[in-house]
Length: 481
Image (cartoon, rainbow, N blue to C red):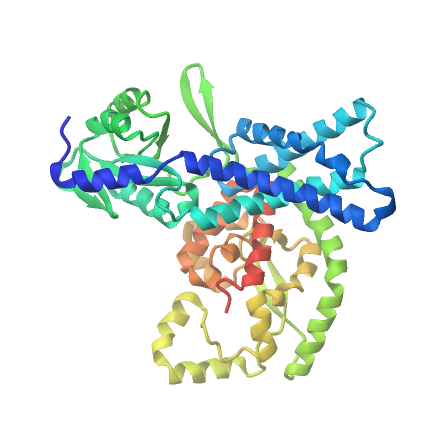
């Protein structure tokens, strides 16, 4: 097979630059570092409080058990750590780590060595292991995901809109670990470059290119291709690539909870929208109730301090309420700490009169980077999202959830379009995908799509992931103003 000679240099450079073995090695090292740190921290915290009765050397004998964690992570598919969603990574890391600690503890008790080891060390190490392994993996990705050698090379079959979207997404999210190196399409007019990736020929080149360039992944991005031709493509290229991903013509559909079902030789896709089922709804409510009651007790002193600062900063009430739309289209009062001056509306109009170029931005997003209505304390509260703490009361009343779509007002219904019916099926949240995905740095249409994605893909693990990411976003004030 002959490749386009004009693109051969670019093809060689791109295909050779991405190698898979370093990715695998670094992810294993990240896990071992996280697990080792959790053990060391747990042992020395225990020794600090019970120095006279504690022998840390006993625990170093368990170091070979680190291999069990690596094996367990490999079994559940955490290696090499590419093409895996953060929610799945959180779920499988938590479950497999818990299982290994359970097996390790049970083995020690069975051998009657359990009384030698302190249960508190194992309990703390178990919790820290989950947290530190996830942090180690995130740090490795943040350091190396943009490197050309990171991840696995992938061939994209199809240079149309879908192929362009796939490449753009993979470029925007290098943490996925799939690096497009080639695009193939039978349409000669599309040959050249697509999003910086060479389109070198027809799809018939795929098997030879996969063999010559050692490319393990292919993405079939041709949703409009006729059924018979698609089947021929899959039958031919499924043996050429260990991993063949198909992009179906089901955009904006559930992605986290779709599973393949064999229905007597017929392929079926089962979609489970868990948040619309009674059982998951009850589970989410109980988690909200327990977390709010426990967290609210710890946050009560902070809430009192903020209330005093709001009162001292500017005249007006401490709290501010606004009518929002909740589940079933019912209206409720959402509470926040007041962050604006009493003459807020007049201040806004005066500001827009002086800066007419900002009117379009205000009409489009209902947000201003430098809002003249916001007080000094209010600006800090908004940047840290602490102004939303009073919404814990809404959570206790069942009007809001800790995690969910952003609560909207009546004026925003039109902008949700057909997705408003999906919005009404769930309880809005104090935090959500919008807050951890750039907040004010993303467009309104993107906010709507994130809300719809949350409803379609909800799970307890997705909520946990959002809550953990919210902590980081609050600390860094990412996208807040």
